[in-house]
Length: 238
Image 1 (spheres, rainbow, N blue to C red):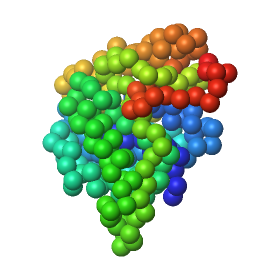
Image 2 (cartoon, one colour):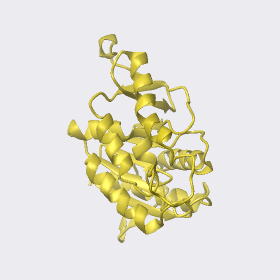
Image 3 (cartoon, one colour):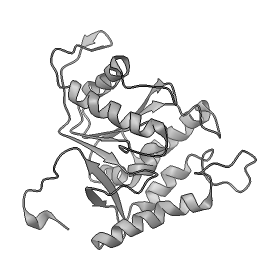
Image 4 (cartoon, helix red, strand yellow):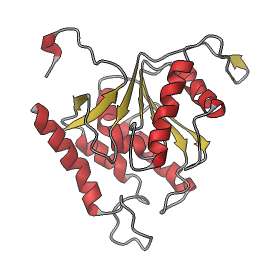
């Protein structure tokens, strides 16, 4: 299946939190979008790997993505080496995305920065013809995405560009809240974490509103780019 956009996240819920509204918007515009989670989030304080898988599939349905896969790398301990790069390359060559979205380049959770660099490196390597990969016994063709963008997560990293997501913040919030084990629940008896407060859930909206305010729209999501952001002409800018 050829996808327009393939979003990677170190953990189930990273993609929803970082760029869930952008994905929902792109799907509404007819784009085919997929998600690949690197780990099952098995080290998360709350919930379990099995529950996170159910929640991830529910969130995928809410956003309308075409496919979601989990590579089952070791949560907290995966590294950027040949073994892990090859698994990412297989996904890139399988789905042939024009655009790849991945974790923030620097963030509070160590897996986010690691995942960001791992996916970025694999995107380059995927375009080298002498790296051979096979899936289901078939040799894959080389493929390099045209663009690699990094969504913003816990830290308020200065974006290189922002996307108008007006009308899609509710869909993003719904997808995030599909992870009932991970976020604010006043009745939960499990330990508190930095993402279980009501303030964190509220931040989904107020951070998007602030970025939107800066560009004159209702809500926006920010991204960083590995190369200069180019536009065809000036009237394409908001």
